Amino acid sequence: MHELDVELDPHTRALRVDDVLQLRGTGAVEVSLDAGLHIAEATLDGHPLGEGRRRGALRVHHVDLSGVHRLHLRYEGKVAPLAQTDHRGTLEGLVPMADARGSYLPAGTGWYPMVGEAPLRYRLTLRLPPGQRGLVPGRQLEESDGVHGYRARYAVDVSTDGIDLMAGPYVVDSRTVEVAGKRVRLRTWFHPEIAELSSGYLDDSVRYVERYSARVGAYPFDEFGVVSSPLPTGFGMPTLAYLGVEVLRLPFIRATSLGHEVLHNWWGNGVYVDYASGNWAEGLTTFLADYAYEEAEGADAARTMRLDWLRDFAAIPEQGDAPLRTFTSRTHGTSQIVGYNKAAFVFHMLRARIGVDAFEHGLRRFWDSHRFRRASWDDLRRAFQDAAGEDLTGFFAQWLDRAGAPRLRLQRAQRRGDDLVVELIQGMPPYVLDVPVEITDSDTNRRHAVLRMTDARQTFVVPGAGRADAVVLDPGLNTFRLLDSGELPPILRNAMVDPRTRLLIASDDADFQTAARELANSFLDHPPSAEADSGPLLLIAPLDRIDALLSARGLPAAPAEVGTTGSARVWTARDGSATTILVIAARDAQAVAALRRALPHYGRQSWLVFEGARAIARGTWPVRAQRLNIQG
Ligand SMILES: [Zn+2]
Image (tube, rainbow, N blue to C red; front, side, top):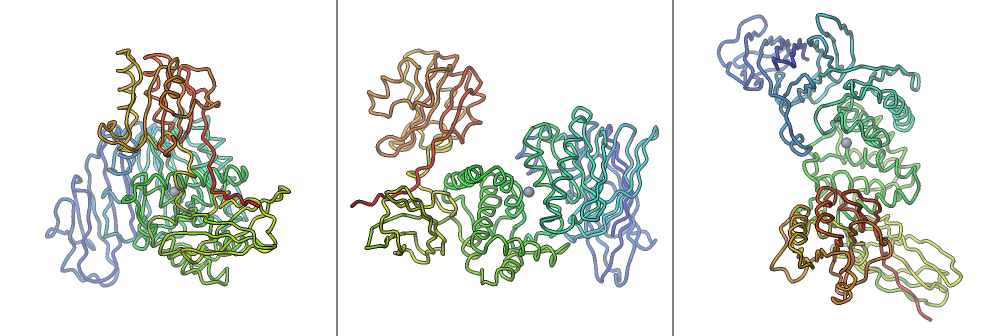
């Protein structure tokens, strides 16, 4: 238990802290503190600690620590200026930082004394100069604000992983609601320039707290806050979401990220992640928030999200993939594709397998038995298993412990009397898969069957489907698998990330050539390949020559979707040997140069039309599901 008194001056970046730390147990204890902080006073049970004290670490040794002891530390120092980093830099190199525009002292960065990685509880008084307000996660006990500055006191009564402290020139707006008989105070701590967004954020926060209280169990805290940050990223913490000012301005954040962060008060901050055995909380939160919002939009929107996940997964280079169980936190794109998206897809398949009722029951059961405790993937499995009355060991093992994903092939479909025989193939060792197929007949009836596959090659008899004229493999994309290039429509990213991408500029004009080369260098991840004789082809050509050029090279003509307007048209295609072609046809050198800024943001599109730097139309080609037509 910490009793902290923290004084921060964001203008001078001076930090002064007084902490009384209760220590329990026996033996020596190592207390660590950021090396840049100067310890002015250190006592244990009132006796000065001389020996064993050095910058950055304090070793309390040769002291009988049986019973409860009071370690009192007074220290001060200057924290770093606000980092000017991008999202990735922010995630990787967090240090305490201060600025009048916003200060952030992240948990685990040594600005408070840390005893190993043990969970902690705290009470904290925060003092800031006039014009600044601030907070830490937890319950606000008291607050005063005036000409002498801001002072607030917070308490966290359940164990937590660390202390995050935030301050800024905040305008605070608040609302108290009753959710399932419990009073919850919601607040926004916003920079003045976005203060007018607060009522919308409060409305939606209430809605999410109500939604998940009803679905999972009562909201586990007394407060929830949305706090604006000068950093370009977002962090969820118990009782609050800390999101960038520019992020909060984005119109879709209230409909997506906000709900995700509210739900983390159940998954992650209500039930803690046992990181040693993997992080289940991001996948579960993504499934019940981000994905659920798409489902609420309709089946097409949900399928589109699954397609995006499968497409991103298919783009991971083989050596970059890792089993889901090894995921602990988001550090780069691939970890998100596995730790968030693949995990969410696994919950989608789990719900399909055990049914909605058992799934919901399992969720509530997991919540009830692990509230404010650490939980692992195995705990989650047991909760669903008990709810479903079915052993799920194999299901979880294949999706958590194996990297990659099954490759499925619809091998054969034949009528046999009144029945239909369907043969499916997958790789070795086989996964146990519930594979949906759609069967159509000449009267345009559609029926759906789910084939449970347990072997690498398996033949199924679908009774009464002897009039079928076609079978389609998993058209709804409900099975997590590695889509092959025949199924996946080409998108810009296929050419952008492939180191084998070759560049062909079909113009004699020197300005056009220069602009085209600069465009290619800026939006390809690797310089265009001079050696590769296979791999994607990037073709940049003047609009008035493109049709003749495509036909001379035997390539598919421009698709109807890109039309005949705009200063530039961009599209992907495949040639006869399934090579991805990315065509950029532009009016002139200026039209090519205008694409440099915008084009890299459209990696998930299959085609676009630009007027100058603005995309005026875009889209993706549909998935080509595996389909077998049945003759006779
Ligand atoms: Zn999250």
